[in-house]
Image (tube, rainbow, N blue to C red; front, side, top):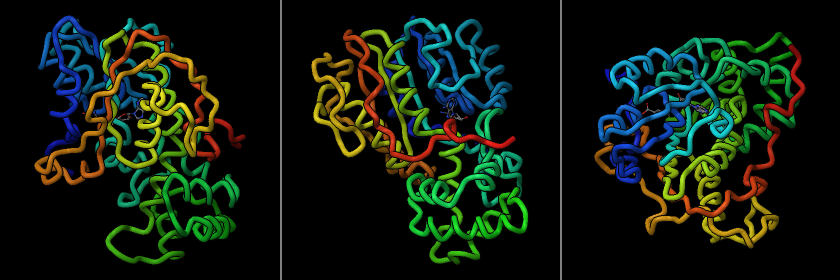
Amino acid sequence: MSARPHYPVMLPEVLAALGATGAETYVDGTFGYGGYSEAFLSAADCGVIGLDRDPSVAARAAQLTSQYEGRFRLIETPFSEMDQIDLPAVDAVVLDIGVSSMQLDQAERGFSFMRSGPLDMRMGSTGPTAAMAVNQLGHGELAIIFKMYGEERQAGRIAAAILRAREQGDLVTTEALAGVIENTIGRTGKTHPATRVFQALRIFINDELGELYEGLCAAERILKPGGRLIVVTFHSLEDRIVKSFFRRRAGEMPGGSRYAPQIMSTDNAASFNLPKRSVVKPSATEIAENPRSRSAKLRCGIRTDAAPMSANDQLLPKVPRVHNVKWAA
Ligand SMILES: C[S@@+](CC[C@H](N)C(=O)[O-])C[C@H]1O[C@@H](n2cnc3c(N)ncnc32)[C@H](O)[C@@H]1O
């Protein structure tokens, strides 16, 4: 673990997109270690509302609450519900999607195949665990999750091996699952063979793509005209959702796409304007300092005064969602 528990990804670019000024209120929808929140609070005399679904960020949030008295508070909630928690209309919503380095480093959270721990992987404290998914889902469901969320080419073989391993007893630890995967597909190249399956399970268990899409729609509902929606993503599945969301809201994609059939009314006025440079990537300096940032992409839109669009654009891939599975206790 580095001396710095979390490196705020693309911070200079996020600050440029935000253009912080006093008397504005911002939502940092993925508080994490508070790297963005702290930078906003020190850039201007603004107010910041931090959101996170992970209760373990509370101690760090308490430091900011006392350091920036009256200007910062944390609310423990999924950001998809930011429009249901009685927030005022705000001047910006910022989302830095994904898992934090603190979460990856905590062995007991079960996010990492590099650390020995229970197969948990929940960012929040409720809901089914990765162990429940691995031990209860059928071959077809596991295979589609590994294929779609992990882009794992050997998804079917790995799912079959998991079902065979389950006959000897439940898979309940990170090592047990990583071992089954390694024994099935072997090791080639630099990447650990379990990388893609662990990513897929994490995305599934935390409903990360559903949260992202619903979070964008919720942000659209609470932003003031002129308010900025700034989103940093780390992989193509997420970026595709953000890109399609903004293009549709800006009226640039009335005809639909592979994930979005032609179902949205085209007579809605654009609810966002997009800057000329629609996607921004990290600088070479940042990539050298923090190689994890190399796949990051920032997209931003500016809210118009048009009504929010309907949230039925079906931008999500066709994969079972965690809330739709009937879990055994
Ligand atoms: C990459 S970290 C954010 C780091 C932060 N920008 C910083 O500079 O410290 C992502 C954080 O978002 C939280 N998170 C992820 N998905 C969430 C969701 N749907 N709702 C609320 N918080 C979420 C995670 O628990 C994690 O703490």
